[in-house]
Image 1 (cartoon, rainbow, N blue to C red):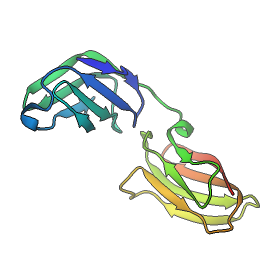
Image 2: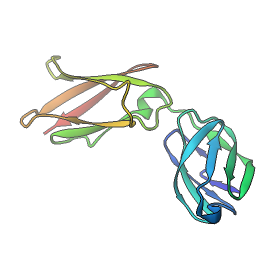
Image 3: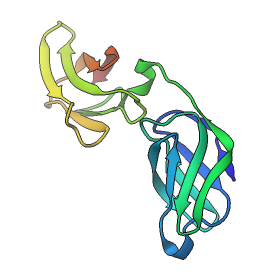
Image 4: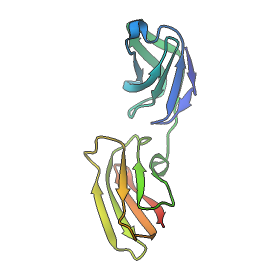
Length: 164
């Protein structure tokens, strides 16, 4: 079995090439060091997955109707700095940005939005959010520079956005 790429960070896509995927049309289970990956696409010879939160470096375990298999090739999990794992896009933006922490291997708890004068303009709790991203909407006329303070289990992350 081949992994492309053989190293990636949380949230990135990895393609597995081999045989006996999707046997009898049934999806396979792909495990990265104890963490189950979401299968995004599969054929009889390939499976594309997203590296899950909780993944660890080492061989992958694949199971399904075609049997159970542990890869000979090891996967290497690339660690990201906290600020690299959280993105805000588009930037600059008009009216809305997306806060995305899909590549985070830690909890994201809250985001506070401050304007250029240092006034708090919004607070959003993120602890119980089902998806690892959230749109942040701004009222028409809210333009200028804003600072997002994102509270995480590893400490605060600062992101600057420009609204026009």
